[in-house]
Amino acid sequence: MHYKDSLKRNLYSVQTAINEVQIDSSNKYDDFKYAKNRVDIVDNILNRYFKDKKRSFTYDEKFEIWNNNEHICAYCNKRLENISDFEPDHVVSHTKVGKTELDNSQILCIKCNRIKSGK
Picture 1: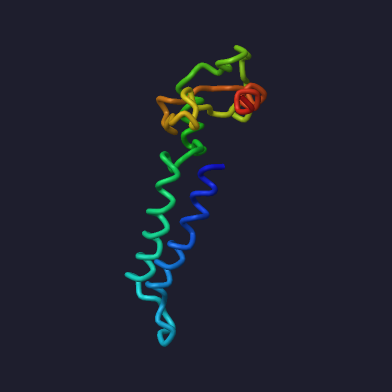
Picture 2: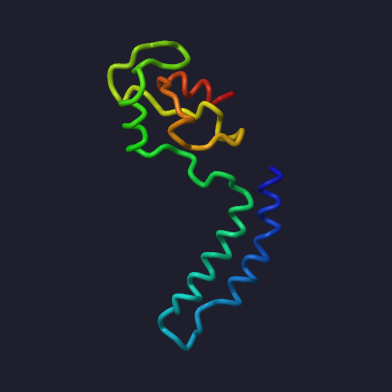
């Protein structure tokens, strides 16, 4: 809840900053530098709240995790037959500042990943 309240408080300053670099109403097209400036303003605000921008593993990463590990769930030790039977999981959870990287991944069956996520 703390992050949500803090983000709400910052919305007004974000809106003000973006209004300062709005498109000139006499110009049909936005100048690149103004558009980039608006994106940078929003990025700078949001980056305060998100340590690791990438939370989910990509399909390519999932494929690599599958190919470089035994096809066994790290929690229940169930052998998995198909790549669609597992979900890549963070060994150190994302909420505890675990990065979304291959060396912080493990294979979990879908059921165990749901149980772990609920903790």
